[in-house]
Image (tube, rainbow, N blue to C red; front, side, top):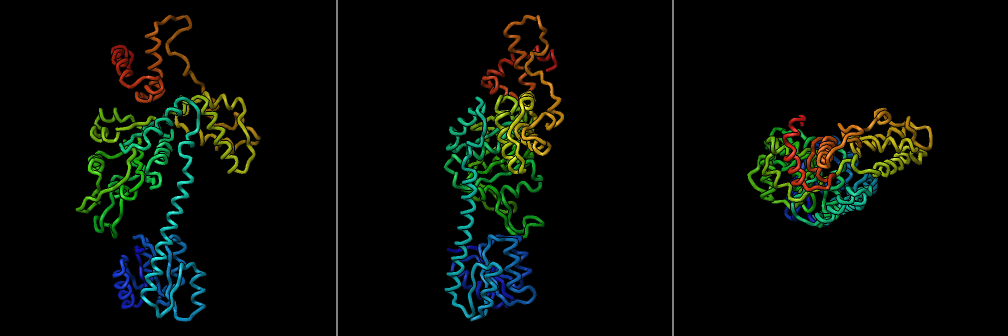
Length: 458
């Protein structure tokens, strides 16, 4: 087994000799003549194993090994010690060295040691990855709730999991779009591969291209070493592009090309590199509106919107609010070491009445705050944030309808649909889901009521 090796020896001729020998045996080798230079290189590049001499000027092998173990515990260190020096061998093990070899040593023995070290590192990485898979294995079961809206999301996850087509997940902030993406990944044929996520809104425009596609050495001022982009890091698994609607317009044609051609070109590079990863995108914006207002490319929208899952907001999930609140209560109280076992009936009423504009994330924060404040084994209304304590909902009323007013069913339907749209901030896709219509039916109804809507200022 071969890999990337860093050789550190203040004897340059020895470092070059070992580099040539290991390169001939299939390893990719770099060398440095001081521990300080090697530590800098380790910050810039990834290595499978480090080989270091014990006796070096400046920082010796013990101190160097200790620094690597503290900063990069995943990288095994092989130390070269003097022949017959038991104290040196024991010292190497004490500072965390993976193995040691004694001078004079056989090159074939070094090759075998390095192969074992590389295998050790990769096995550790695999174990770490599998632990993450196990921790995420519940996947779809983490989508807590029994409402019809959540059950429909779970059904869609099962249906789209093994498809290779692009998937777009839509929903307001805090509704759990990444959780849905992870559930799709865990049920797909890519489940054993990596799940790589990036928030497109969190990366500066100048860095986003390099983050996604990688760069070659010297591509820009700080590009001191080549870097692999997330498309390639996700190979064999899933790449999740969260908040795709926030992606700068200048980047969108580059992303479109990568999705169409199934290749990426690193910044500053000339070669197209193929990747094998499923791409899932998510947005809290209504992308149809973004396309209509020319803030999002239409061709990119159709490329990512082959399959679609709309994640419902918390306010339309009924009693799921209480189920989730109890779930968060159990988790938070255990972490805080407090015995808080339930919600008082007035608290349940307040939680059900509130509109939850921040969705599940806001509910979790609310419960964390309440557990921190409460002095009892049951949450009380006084433990809740003021805006939830004082919230008054009129969502069940049909606006503008007096107690004795008689309306046609068409007018009742019109007013109710407009009310739902208002609650959902004009998101027609989610509104259609909540109302039980397909989007085309909703658009036809809105078009039919167009004159009236204009008259009302909608």
